[in-house]
Image 1 (cartoon, each protein chain N blue to C red):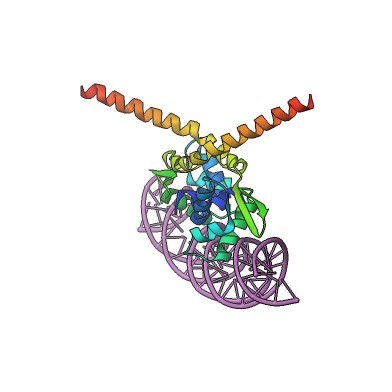
Image 2 (image 1 turned 90 degrees about the vertical axis):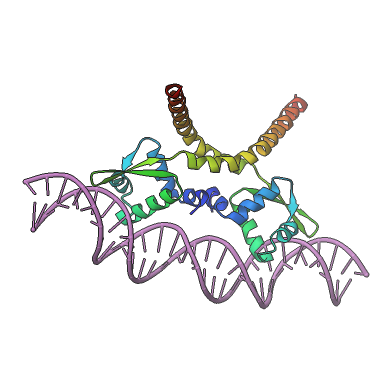
Length: 105
Length: 105
DNA sequence: AGTGTATATAACCTGACGGTTATATAAGGT
DNA sequence: ACCTTATATAACCGTCAGGTTATATACACT
C-alpha cells in the first residue's frame, strides 16, 4: 500500500500523531484506541510498516514502533508542486483585497 | 469525503496534476483518461468538488474545472507537524556521517 | 515444563469505492 | 421543434479495506 493510501485512514493518522511524540510499544497503541480491537491495531501497524512510515524494534515480547520520517517526504514532494500555485493564488487574492480597500477608502 | 481520501486515489491525483497546469472542461479530462469511462471521470470530479479541491464554472454546456489550492493547505498543515521531526532526524544522520568521515580521514 | 503476556496471523463478514452501462438534464445548432 | 453535444446521475456489480473473533507465535517468569 502506498504512502497516500496509508495516510488516508484517520486511525492511522492518529497513530502517527502519537508516534511523532516518541516511539511506543504496540500495546500502548492498542490502549490508545479502545474503540477498536488489538488485531485491528496490529493490521494498521502492518500497513504503516509496509508503507515505510514506521519501523519496529524488538524488545523482549514487545514490538517498539517508531516513526520513519523519510516516507513522508514523498507526500511532501507531491504537495510541493501545488504550493507554487496556491501561493500565487493567495497573493492574487491579497492584491485584490488591498485594491478593494483602496477603492473603499 | 475528506481531502486525504480524495487525494489517495491515483487517478484523482493525476487529475489534479493536470488541473495545476490550468483550468479545463470536464471533456478534456475525460479525453485525458481513455482507460476509464466518462461517468467514472465525472464521479471522480464530484469527489474532488466535495473535498473542495476543485471548483466548477459553467460555460455553455461545458463545466470548466479549476484547482482550488486552499483545500491542500489542510494536507500541508498535517505534514508540517512531521517536518520538524524528520529534519531533526536527517540532521542527526548528517552529523553521524560527517563524524564518520572525520574518523576515516 | 507450564503459565501468562505481547503481538501477529487466519478466517470471515460487511460496507464502501471504483468501475460499468443506461438514462436524465441542459444548452446549442439547424 | 429536433437533434447533437456535454455532463451528471441512477442502478448495478466485484473487489478490497477495515472490522471482528479465534488462534498461533514467541518471549518471560516461576
